[in-house]
Image (tube, rainbow over all chains, first blue to last red):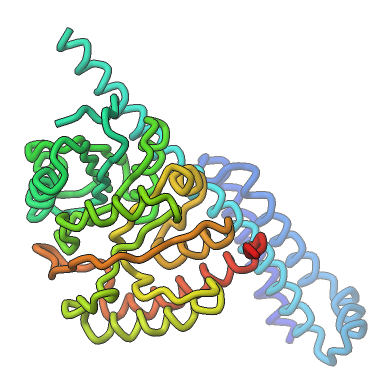
Amino acid sequence: MDRLFDVVAIFSLVLIVWVLSSVRRAHIRVEYSVSWLLAGAVLLVLARWRTLDDWIAAALGISDSFIALAMIAGAAFLVVLYRLSLRISGLKDSSITLAQQVAILEFRLDALSDKKKLS
Amino acid sequence: MSSITTPAKRLLVLIPAFNEEGAVAGVVAEVRSAVPGTPILVVDDCSRDATRSQARSAGAQVLALPHHLGLGGCVQAGYRLAYELGYDYVIRVDGDGQHDPRDIPTVLAALEKGDCEMVIGSRFVDDNGEHTNVLRAAGIMFFRAVLRPILGRPVRDPTSGYVGVNRTALELFSATFPLEYPEIEALVVLQRKRFRFVEVPCRFRPRRSGRSTITAVKSIYYMIHVLLGVFVNVLKFEGRKK
């Protein structure tokens, strides 16, 4: 069981380092890294602080503290994914509107320059 | 041909097209012969072939999207431009040649009557559905059943893209238009605003070139996507006209 907690701790450390490295290389924007860093930090704390896991497991009525940890990790990542879906939906809407506006402006510019050519 | 930026007439024919180099010029020519002098706007959804140049050389004006938006985004771009330019009526004819442009005057006449905001060119009003395959026919029957209680009236050809709108619907669709598979959801959007539609008989033909974007596998995704879209639009209902 201890090994499982160690694996989770290593995984969360790798996640944190990976996200920080991506931020440093400007592959991910700071505002989008916060959710991942938070999720990694929570996972790391839970993987190292067994008393807290036991307390959460007892509060949730779960006999195994690792299952409690897995549940919290799953929920944390679902929240992160949901937030990203919201962001992507917003960005897609903006991108569609932008593309339509660019096309319309280009069309109007072409019409204007055609008029100028004719006059 | 009339200039699209200075509408002498109130009608614009809108042709959404994606990779339709084999068909679009013929469609434009047919539209020109069916409604001479009417401005024609081809909205090119960032085709990878010669759709744009084919449309231009056939005499249409082209609204060229900078990246691929899908059918809904493509049609909405045309609606937006038509609304900004002050058109009163827009009739959409697909760029693959399935819609017979000789029916444009029928659609326009129904719009000009003024008792509806949208006219659907239907292949089933006069039972002209012989070019519909079994899978599509089953889908149409399914969506007829789904839409019947939502619209409060029957619709015979809910997946038809042969559609005419007046300026009121044009204003609505410029602001709100379903983006991926728009035809069915657009009916629910109309209903939300208490707008009316009528169906008129129109001739449909097999596509002239290319392949439909809705393959057998995609049709399952299509059904789920459209059902979800309809459901979401029902949740936004603003009340039915008494």
